[in-house]
Image (cartoon, rainbow, N blue to C red; front, side, top):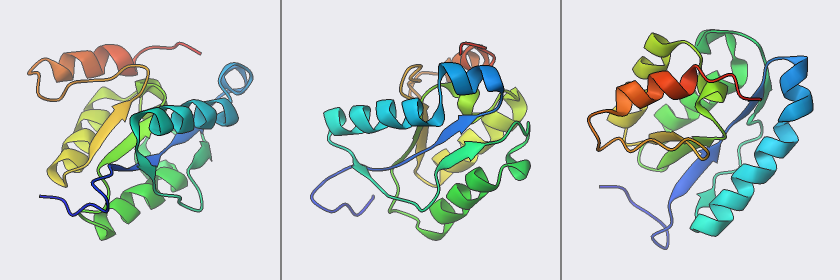
Length: 140
């Protein structure tokens, strides 16, 4: 069971762009604004990390320094983070096996990763199928 301050859900937000087209359509600023509005509406407490915005086209998590620092923070602050939120699943990863592995790792630490525009219910046994569909989406 998680220890919470004032019963708030503690979240980390993550914003990423990887191409010029995405920068024009859904900039990190637009992503951040939508994520912050969502967290405010839901009553979530955002854990303010020094860096949560990434401008990387790297296909692997290991080649994304901001994501690596977020994962390191989560591992070193167990029971303090409830959710890792991002706008869409293709901002998290487009590599299905890798995304599924990181999702499982986060969930095993009690952290729910999720996209606010493509939310997955991890209590539903079909979540891997939805993850596959969402993370391949090339919506800008």
